[in-house]
Image 1 (cartoon, one colour):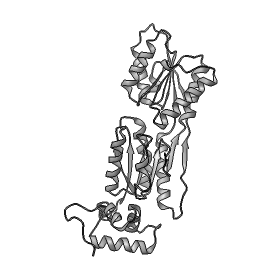
Image 2 (cartoon, helix red, strand yellow):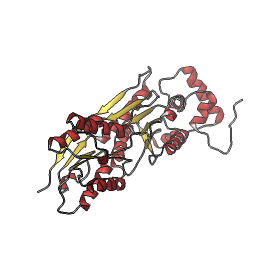
Image 3 (tube, helix red, strand yellow):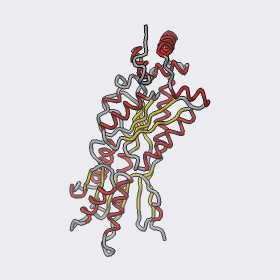
Image 4 (cartoon, helix red, strand yellow):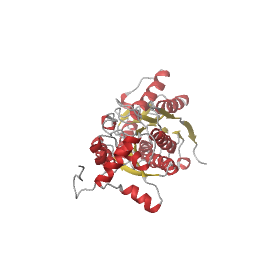
Amino acid sequence: MNTRPDPVTPLTMRDVAERLGVSTMTVSRALRGQRGIGEATRQRVLAEVAALGYRPNKLARGLRTGGPSELIGLVVTNLANPFYSQLAVGVEEVCVRYGARVMLGSTSEDPDVERDVVTDLLERGVDGLVVVPASHDHSHLGAERLRDTPVVLAASPPMDIDVDCVLVDDFGGTRAACRRLIERGHRRIGFLGLPPSLWTGSERFRGYALALEEAGIAVDERYVSRHRGDSTLAREAARAMLALPDHPTALLTANNRNTVGALLALRDRPDDGEPVALAGFDDIELADMLHLPLTVVSYDAAEVGRAAASLLFERQRSTAPLHPRRVTIATTLIDHPVPR
C-alpha cells in the first residue's frame, strides 16, 4: 500500500516521479491531461497521486484563479548584465502565450551554485528549464540527471549532453568588429575578453584572432585580457594596456560590461592623449550620446530568449522524438558617430 513518505515535509512532483520511476515531465503531463504519455501510465500516475494525497500548489493556484499552472525555470549567470534581463523578457513573452510563468534563478557565474539552483527548481516542480551555463561542465543538465525534464541551453552549446540550444553568432560578430577597426587603419588592437572556458569567451577571442591573422597582424599578448565580464576588471585591464609606451590605438571588448570598463579607462586618460577607438560586443544604452565614436556588435537578446522558450515548448508538446536542435541568432555591426 502506498503511504505518504513524510507527514510534515510537503510532497513535490519529483517525489511522485521517483516513487513511480518516471520523469517529472510524465507526472506533469498526466496531471494536466497532455499528450505524450500512454493511457496506462497516465492512470498509474493519477492513482499514485490520489493515494499520496499530492496536489501541486501551482496547479491548485491555476484552478482557483483560472491563471497559468505551468512553471518554466530560467537560470542565468549575472543579473547585473542587461543581456539577461532582455533574455528573460523574451522567455516570458513565449511563456505567456503558452499560459506559463517564469521562475528565475541566478548563479553569480558559479557552477556549484548553478547545480543548487537547478536542483531547487526541479524540486519546485518546474516543467522545463532554460539555462545559461556558468561553465563547460553540463553533466548535471543531462536527461538522466533531470529525469527527462526538458532543458534548452542559451548562449552555449551542450557539452556531452543531447539538448537544444540557442547561440549568438559570437565568432562572426567579433570578427566583423575587429575587421572594421583594421579597415580604419588600426594595427594595435587591445582585446578585453571573457574566460576561454566559456563558449562566448572562446568564440569571441577566435573572431578577434582570425581577423588579425587575416590582416597579417600577430596577436600581442600584452594587448589581451580574458576575465569574467566585470566593468571594474575591464577598466583595470584597459588602463594597463593604455599605459604601455606602444599602447593600443583601439580597444575591442567582448561584452557590454567590458565596454563600460573600457569607457571608464578612456575617460581617465589625459585630455591630450592620442584618441583610442572602441568597438564592443553588445549594444549599450546611451551609445549615441557618448563623445567618442563607438562600433557595436548588436543583436536581439530578447530573441535569444524567445527562441529558447519556443524550442522548449515544442519539445514538451511533441509526441515524436526530436533530434537536438541548434538556433543561431545573427548579429549586426552598428557605428555610433560622435554627437554634434
